[in-house]
Amino acid sequence: MKKMIGLTSVVVSFSLLTGCGQTNNSAPTNVESTTTSKMTKEAETAKSELTSKIMKLRKTNTAIEKDPGYFEPNDFRAFKNELNPIMYALKLKSKLDVNDSEEINSVLTKVEKKVNDLTGDEALNAQKRLHTGKAIYKTLMQESLDRSFKVLNVTNSIDNELAFFIDHTAKENANNLAKLGEEADSVINDLNSEKTYIDEVRKATKDNVSLFSDKELKLLNSTCDNLTSSVNNQIKVLEQFKPVYVDNGISPNEYLVNATTDYDNAKKSFLKIEGIFAF
Image (tube, rainbow, N blue to C red; front, side, top):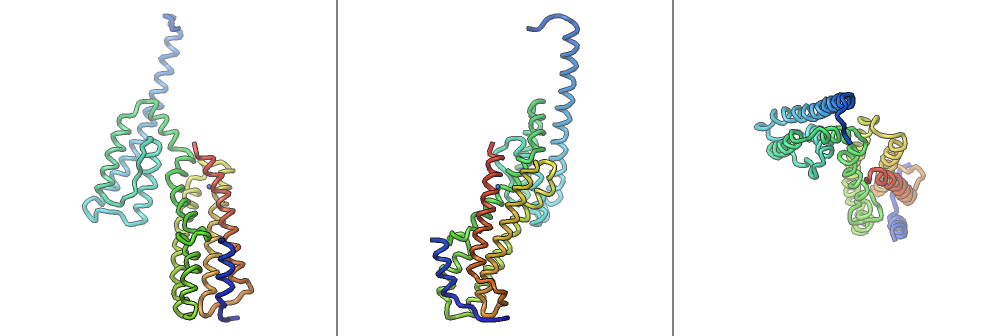
C-alpha cells in the first residue's frame, strides 16, 4: 500500500536514539653441515618465491607504464592487494595507495632491493609472515573496516549520511517532499557504494580462507554480515522519506533501531578481530 510519510516522529525518535661448546669430533661436524645446507635451501626457496612475485608485479606495471600510466580501478585494486601483503611481510612500513605507474615503479624498486638484501633467516621469516591471516587482515581488510565503522555509525551526524539527512536535510525540506525524495535517493546511492568496502573484506576472506582459523572466519563473516544489514536498514529508513513509498508495516524508527543494533553487533565482532591481530 502506498502512502505519504510523516516526518516529525522519525526526527524526534532519531534525536532520542543518538542523544573485527663445539668439539673437533667429525660426527657432529657432519650433522651441522647437513643442517646448514638444508636451511640454505629453504631460505633460497623462500627468497625465490618473493622474487618471483615481485617480478610478476614488475612485468604487470611495465605494461601500463607509458600508456596510459595507471591501472583501471579494479586492476589497481588487484595489483595492490598482491603487493601490499609482500610489503607487510618484509616489514616495510609504507604501502601502495597511489595508482600511478611512476609511484608504483618507485615502490617496486624499494621492494626489490629489500628482497635482494634479505639474509636466509630474514627470507624465511618474510615468507612465513606472508602466509598468515594477519598479513591479509592488516593489508586487505583493516582499512576498509575502519572506514565502514566510521561512515555507518548512525549516531555520528558528521560522518554518517543518514544521521546528517535526518538532523538537517529532513528538517530543512519538511515542506518540500519532492526535494526530500531527491536527497534521499542521493544518500541511498552513497550508502550502496559503501557496500563495496564490505565486499572487499568478504572477498579477501574467501580468497584466503585457509589462512584463518574457524574462530577468525566466524568473526570476519559476522562483522561483514552485520555491517551489510546495517546499511540495508539505513537505506530502508531513507526510502520512507520519499513522497511515495511501499508501506510494509515496519516504521522508519524500527529500521533505525535495527540499523543501530546491527552496527553494534558488527563492532563487537570487529573488536575481537582487532584483539586477535593486534600483535
